[in-house]
Image 1 (tube, one colour):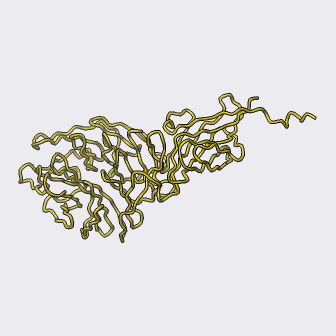
Image 2 (tube, helix red, strand yellow; image 1 turned 60 degrees about the horizontal axis):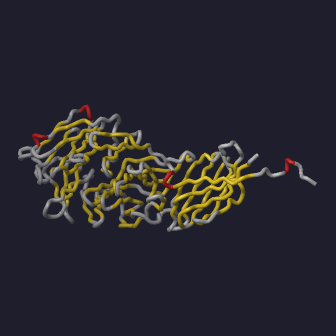
Image 3 (cartoon, rainbow, N blue to C red; image 1 turned 135 degrees about the horizontal axis):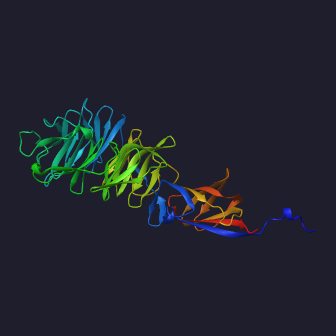
Length: 423
């Protein structure tokens, strides 16, 4: 007896959708994607960063600063811890607001930390309070001079002499900037100029040789910079406004990235050509990383409360401990990294299409979760093996998450195997 036509399964053919890790942004099928504790390495996605504990401390940290290979973490009692050599300085009632490092041709590096009404010069295990200048909000070294911001005023030391600030001394001085630009938020040396970030503008300062040759040029920029977000990154300066991240190279400044996946906070760092920002995602603290060279971002799921760093690495605070990010490896704070993506998986011919199996080209093991029309399927996948989805999942818009399940996992390509009606 021939069964009724309605009970017959329609003939189907297999279709394969290929998603390459190095083609995520260009793929017409990928509507959106997010990298969580995964980063790009060549043509693959690998676990983004591990973390090693540097030290444990009592008390609560309020700020972190980086200068000349050292990270300074300030506690609520105004004790400052310096890493990686773990030296403590106590400043009593004065809260330091930043740091700059001056490395003379001979002798050890000198660190200068400004407070609201004074500047401290630090040595290996002690410090002195300088008579001049009278404190400031941020400090930087440029062309062998120290520059210090005081409201909308810029003070500078004599060249090669970080201790000489008195106006009666040769080659020292102060520049009163127009109040229209607002207070100075950050000082950032780059490309032979000192960039002065103010509340309402950005100035590029030439400060070569004699101070009679100092000059300023306004950078074409429409926005309001945010304090504590300015970092030298690769071939430019990355900073943030309420709109997102900007990239400044010389006199050119352009918008480059609108953060997603997380809400960025006003603490940042730079390391290995990438921009790191303290951030919050789904109610949890994390670190947001932007790579200007690849124009791509990812989230590190580490519970950081503060972040700072530079050429030697990125440090973050969690609780009363300080950690340093490693260049790679398995995240210690989460069971793996994840790629989350939303795909247009509909048939070009308008036919019904069902997800049947998945193949991951790369290495290691993964947990794969797929969802369409409110129905979810999960599969444990080993790289190189075609793994069936336990029940066929009808697709149109398909959301999937691939999470690494072991330390050696890496992802180059995802092959999604579909069955598609032919009638």
